[in-house]
Image 1 (cartoon, rainbow, N blue to C red):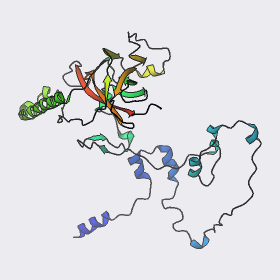
Image 2: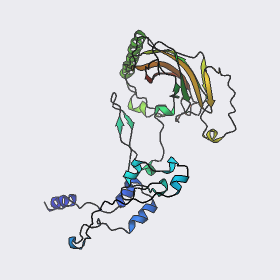
Image 3: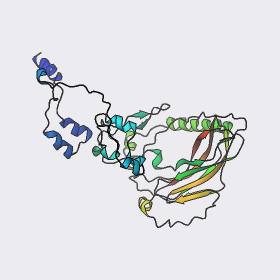
Length: 345
């Protein structure tokens, strides 16, 4: 009973008032730690005598206004050097007029929040409380391996009229990637593909696992762990058709040093200027043509899509030291550039 009482007594310990536990949790550097070393562990003013506190005099309104300087009438105003109302409200004690008088406001500590996918409940991103404790990152996210597609610019979207849209493609890998564009499958073809993928997934799960002696062999340890997910159907109503460019496009590998080199690219690609309107490094801008539905009303969102076909090279390290294998993959890309506008826009 005595040991249990001592154990319960330890659980009701006083809260820590020092800063040392934040060093391990949030990675505060040595400079900040030395600045906080001389501070008191108790908050200022908690045990102060109430009778010795100074009396605060309320501010009084005045009719006299400080005159404007002569430079206000002679110099050309520069709005970049004048603070906004939001910047002045952040510092109500001073309310500086010029940006040179601003000082950094106190901000609370921000960290990432753990987010999960609403459909499959997988972790989309995890919080990194202490970045110094992370030795390396395993690049399991898709944006490290598949080309990135971004909307660069597009013309006003009108019902029944062809509009040009420019997409920016980025190759994040260290290998040369060829990209091709294919139309989306029809609903019948999509249902058939889902049935085939579901049967293959069930067949893989039914296969018996190897025995304990076989599972400890070297080839089995070298095989990467494959996590299979059931196929899902994307429920998006398409309100526009896409005219895909003919042929494919080659994206050079990513080169971090090339971003700071203004001498120009050494790759000589025979691109069609009507399709590839811009190219730099591992980036390329491709021109598409979309035609919204003729019966779409003004304000209706424009949804369209296509299938992006690209080559993936598996560079994950394995024990058997096999050569990188190139695999052709396909991913569905859905675009929502904007809404239908009228003829006067």
